[in-house]
Image (tube, rainbow, N blue to C red; front, side):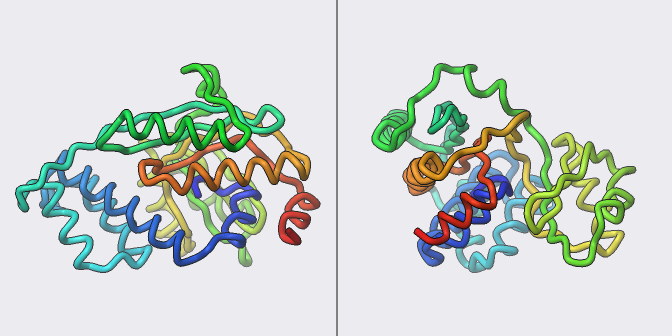
Length: 251
């Protein structure tokens, strides 16, 4: 799941691990193929490919799968890899907003499947621009709190261009402009601070807290979208209180 909000933590606990892992692998492989198509198969000369491969290895994608994806994307196998990135906007329960990021080789299929998943699960497709203005593109690094304080993290990333450090459950999140993400990661590494994920994401400017009924509907909607092969990421401004999370855990 994209983002590191409290409802994301709940979702991870409720996930069917093997199925989610397979879907995660497929997304990472697709990112490698796209990066290789754009910049070629040489990791040293293609920073985008190097980053995509690094993320795949961190998630334990087998090396054979990675190598095949690089060759396929770079056109070394004779196959044509041609993906289009599309972002759909939707409304969920209690006025929550969703951005659905797709990477697809068939725009008609992606549009049809996203629309069906949204409308069948209590959401509505929104007009372009009516949801996206609620989000900004940001570099986001998530790291476990452990023994760290917010000041510890700030000291490591302030000179690297970080905008802010936020608390999110058991994690800290460091937000930056997308162009500063690599510098922020380097700052954490130099300080010896371990991090879990580093991504460019759509971050909401404000969040909508959901009650338990709305949260259940939201999770069904999210599940339906996340299960689609063409969907790479789902971003939302939905937020869940500790009480709502506890109730979801009992379901």
